[in-house]
Length: 322
Figure 1 (cartoon, rainbow, N blue to C red):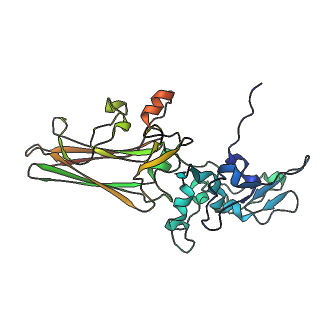
Figure 2: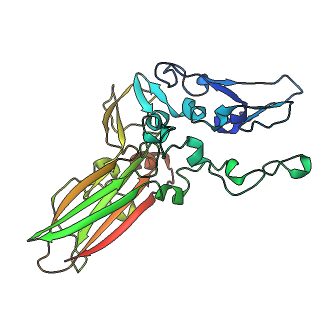
Figure 3: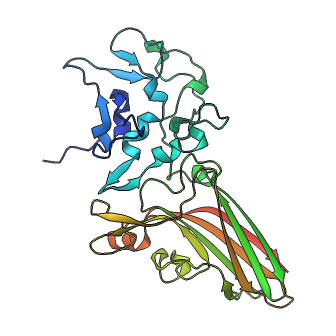
């Protein structure tokens, strides 16, 4: 017998009546992760219930709840504590940002970003009593996220400057979390950003790095053309977990006891800056190439599991400098 398919809470969100939050922290209780913080309504046999965001529903088995349009609906599955370590917390990150302030011009809920309107003016068949509505009031259910490259590219903005002074080529890169209501990356600690900064002479020979950070071993050792960037100039942005008993890092096995070894992810509306100095090639022109990738899991784990997860190229910038 095949096991029953597991349903993601998103698929049953129209049965969610309440999210149980700690009144002191306004976050889920650490010992109630995921569905344990959700209160569902289950109708008796022969009946159905749908909970939604429209206050004009006809009396019957459908009912209105403002929760369906509030970020709190997402809290239970986007905050998780294991062994006293906060593993994922995109809801809390949103709460601590300006996007959560209803008095701010930047105020946006999770639904505003991840379920934006797609232009339709009705969601129920008109022949079955559906109503024509303001298209801006109808949320799409595409759940935009890391599978949508345009959505991801809009999440951050990258700017860079390069200048030659004497025998030094200096490059400064700024990555601003300009459009995201939480840290980037967020949720799963497997996710990370990889910034690769390279400089070449006019013959395509890489210039030596004199000062600046280099990418860690866990970005992959080997051919950069196959996604292995360890040792190249750049920066990786991640929440890095370390298993307490084995001291293995980075780890995604947060069901084991872990601690946060480092966390340099970029909070909402903040900018991460990094600088690099290369040996300039005399009076010749240099090419500076800057690439920012979003990687969904550490490459060693991908190889171990046989996962085929292509890096998302978020930003690609080239500059000629003399």
